[in-house]
Amino acid sequence: MPFTANRDYKEAPRVVASAAGMYYRDQQGREILDGTAGLWCVPLGHSHPTIVRAVQQAVATLDYAPAFQMGHPAAFELAEQLIAFSGHQFGQVFYTNSGSEAVDTAMKMVLAYHRVRGEAQRTRFISRERGYHGVGFGGMSVGGLPANRKHFGNLLGGVDYLPHTHNLEKNAFSRGLPEYGTHLADELERIVALHDASTIAAVIVEPLSGSAGVILPPKGYLKRLRELCDKHGILLIFDEVITGFGRMATPFAADFFDVRPDLMTTAKGLTNGVVPMGAVFSRSMIYDTLMQSPAGIEFFHGYTYSGHPLACAAGLASLQVFKEEKVLEHAQSMTAYWEDALHSLKGLPHVIDLRNVGLIGAIELESIPGKPGARAMAAYKQAFAEGVLVRTTGDIIALSPPLILEKQHIDLLFGKLHQILKNLA
Image (cartoon, rainbow, N blue to C red):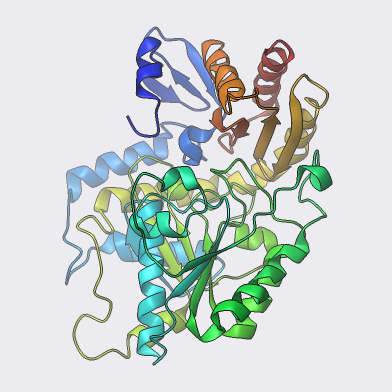
């Protein structure tokens, strides 16, 4: 089982059998409030009828179409709508099947772009400590979580890391973005001086680090990164697999922070988690440069299931729901109530930090000496037993509910967590 303590799981399996709206249900029909939107990937709630109908119709119409040297209408229609959803900040999208594949694809785009421009020496990637960019060998190489790569030998060389922005001493219990740490973006200047800008292809960062436990960027940090990348001719990639499609109550985190990257990797909420799909958003300058390659296949890359008809149907239906049901507006209306509910946990035993932005929250717990992660895992198991699904990474409880939640769901979620944390050993 993926990212699962298999032996521990077998002692007391957690099984869900169905889902609708804000809830999973187990095999006995017990409701479990989804506090994590699955794995950050169900912003519109489960089994949305518009998406269900679209996928049912798609599989009966065109179950599969090759993506090599041919296409189908839904793939082009979805691309146009995705570009519109981004506010026309990008020119093209390239379809993948997951966030991990989107990251590897973006990295290959960057390398190909520089080669066509005559700067093939630009091969180095700069990422960030505690960053997560999927589980492909490219994504692992630029990831900043040692546990994700320590078992797998040599990865891609030529990677360096910016420091992470997590600082409990300065920023604990901040509401929204922290004040301290903007200067950490200037570490890019040190790395440029070490390697020379002419060797650096791109900087890749999550606008906020999700899998590491909701580590937020300080105010102005991402704008400073953009300025430095522009200064040195370095491309900037935002990994928006988690933050894309409304998690910040904006279309993308790039909108929330008012920073435009050169490439943006997405997945998860793109299809509401219904059919696996990812997409790399690219500025037109990258596409236009690649089109200067010799005649033939300009970008020698792709997947059997790129732009799969069912995934395109789910993506189109999801964008329809975002628009017709004013999902982003509703999410924005919930953020203040969400923030207050999260910070009501301050003062409970072992709670050493609370963090939030958009409809994202994190509860950091003091670790049990010699047993890192054990306290949060105990809270996770108890929450599931009491009908609430949360997510843990180390001793951090991460929360990212479907964007359709109402105040009663927030009350239920944090009411349960209050009781669990109050009595947690």
